[in-house]
Length: 138
Image (tube, rainbow, N blue to C red):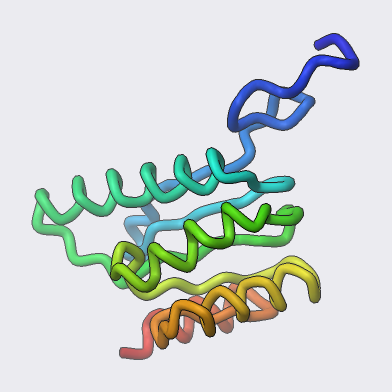
């Protein structure tokens, strides 16, 4: 890739995807990994893929517990991306969601989004184990 070209939509300059979303059958959760900075388009794609997977699982009669997202490689989220995430919680698009990893910035932004959207169905954790335990306790 030429140095001055912007990365392709949804990809890092290295060509790596900026997020991954998949079904974890063993834990009965949707897993996600967020990588790098997120803009409005990235946020929309993450939600679109999550909703599509959730819908597919529901049609098959599969009961999922919630979603678990690894933020350890995440960067910053633009203000528009944060608004999209907050709206998705307000509108009930996202079910019970646990985030883990990352640093103080990610945790602060996530907690702001949770607070702004007035959701009780989302929390940020230091470790994956804590997050998974919270998801399963209900």
